[in-house]
Length: 186
Image (cartoon, rainbow, N blue to C red; front, top):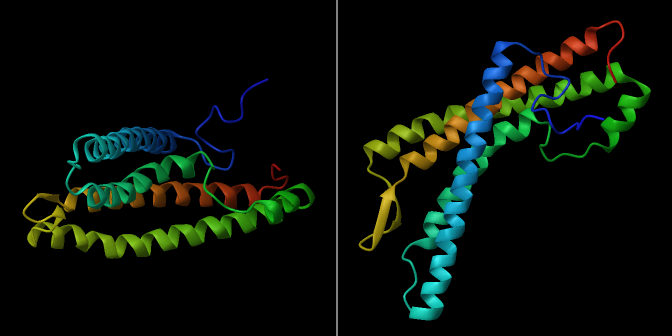
């Protein structure tokens, strides 16, 4: 029996070279996000040990972690989307898929289309943030103690948004094509 979680592509996503490329990119971003998670865990542990054992906490830990968490979430979002693991309530969709698969595909396609549009709107506002961050020399941290540029974090968010938008668009197309079939797959 095969493991349904072994594939990165849910059955609704169209195949082809573009889907494979998007899935590979999503996996690499998820790996980078995982390394970032380990990095902030190490930073938090160093801060706790430094604070408790030596009365010397790591400066700007809270600021760095808060900026990194947002970047990590957006780096891992495309892979979660490609694998069909986004958080949502599937109660209605699961029941509808058993009784009326075509209607379930149309409803799911509408959900994915709405997500695609929302990500496009989000990207519209994040893009200029990168330039403003670079031009304004914006930093994260505590001035005079430890600072680092803000633009890499915003860039991670934009890259994650762009790839997640592409994943949602591919899923939307796949769901619409499946819904238009004579006998849609459940």
